[in-house]
Length: 203
Ligand code: GRF
Image (cartoon, rainbow, N blue to C red; front, side):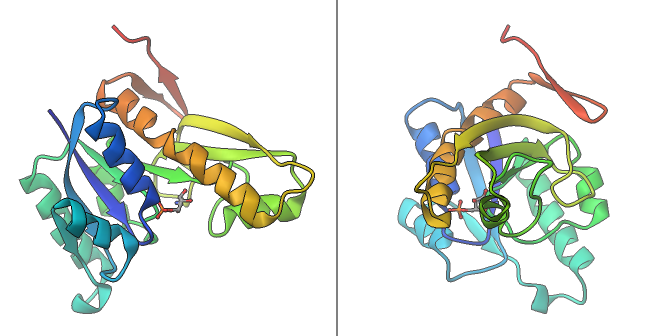
């Protein structure tokens, strides 16, 4: 069984969707640990409800970010994690951590990258007047939302949309995208070739 760690900082709807994919057999894996920098969030409430192991790491308990992520790495390694999944995790990882887990750490972002990286991607896209937006799952590199893209799904922006309605449509699409990306990566079918990811056929 493949072993996943999910990193969260918020409401946790992607965590829930991922766990549902595991529960109903779409994704053959186990969430070994949920890691967060916040305690009072929906994602952690969900872990408590579902008895998913979770650990909170707070920056204020450390001299610097690097030390905090050294501790996180120790935990990840002790659990023999195969895949690190950022699902609404709001901290950038230090270079040392990013390098260590290169090719094994992915993130989901609510836009069609490389358009609209960073915060408030849905608002950025809506304000720019795009007619199509969506979500992307990518391997995390040292930049902010710049890594090789594994999967993208598009979402239309309709005439009467508000930022909220289009955001909700993107989120729904995210929920059906993240588990697919996890499945592809865990089955060894996502081959990084420079800036690109080649998706291999299922054997
Ligand atoms: C999602 O839109 C994700 O793409 C972004 O942060 C949001 C997290 O939402 N990185 P949730 O906590 O999974 O509901």
